[in-house]
Length: 465
Image 1 (cartoon, helix red, strand yellow):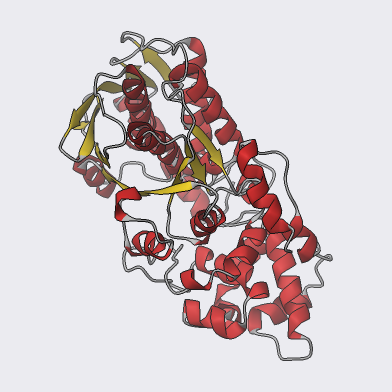
Image 2 (cartoon, one colour):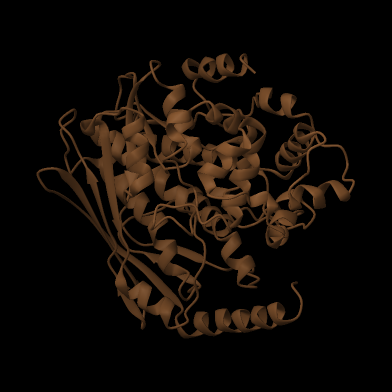
């Protein structure tokens, strides 16, 4: 339990959690609707917290001419319903009603447990940062609708060389984009485009007709309730990416979705727990999703993460050579709306550190606008990234071992030259010897779901290190 004022806030939030659950005991997923415009598939969902508010979030996904879209297609209906099952958790967390009633489809016992696992693990950060301790009965999932049935075989029965690559605007998806250049027929998927995502596909030379845009619109009632002080926090966004990217692939007849989640995403954010900011980017979720999709949807689209066999530090080493992307990539959440690096948050400091062993200082300073390692005010973030503090920042950052390896290598590279403030501080701690950076960047983790046809793409790259 966190101390002082933080624990006072924890008590307030725990009390609020219990109070809201008593006042608003039921959440309802009452419907989903598919419709077509000339260029898009439109998805509308209907949720409500009984006695509080109704919510109608909306998705619009671009479609092309490769495959005819049929809104009565049972596979597409299963996918749409499932996307709604992920979307609902963003609205459920407002009051955390103990009962979730699904009136638009039926779930069997295994499905019910699958979704409850996603909600509980995907909301681990939400519960932790709000100081809420959910019990095993945090949610009773009741389905009352007609079952969508089980698939009799893959809906896309013929495998092709087309690969859809979700683009987030950071270094990881750029690396996937370049690793697959000349190895596959590349398409890109962007949710709610911004400068860095559009610039990435431009630099990657992806034609406009191979860029699939999805627009996700949140319901304004949720935004207003958040302003009023109802519960708020992190939800498993990458699970939305999973289901929506398979929808985008299915309606375009694309056989593969290649994510850019690395082995480092498996490490817990809070040491000694399974609380992980990146849970829906983890191998555990990836395997669960693949199994669920096969049993209950079977679209024929193969979902996997190309970068799962390697760590963030390997990705950084590859990205260091992709100089065309250096001026345009962005991973900073704080600066995302302005398409800038804020150069003051955990994500910025992590990316600065992980790239530093592979780039000249002048290049990292040019990217971020200043030498972040010379700012002692960033010490609290630095301590979390290095494992000095047991809790990593709740951001998509790499493992503690990788950070320590990068810092040790950077200090070695400085030699007798004066060290910037954070490196001086780090050296003074006499930390245990970090893992060799060369070994880390060459490591290939066999715990992955990469189809055999793409394994060589990663292994051939590691041979160059």
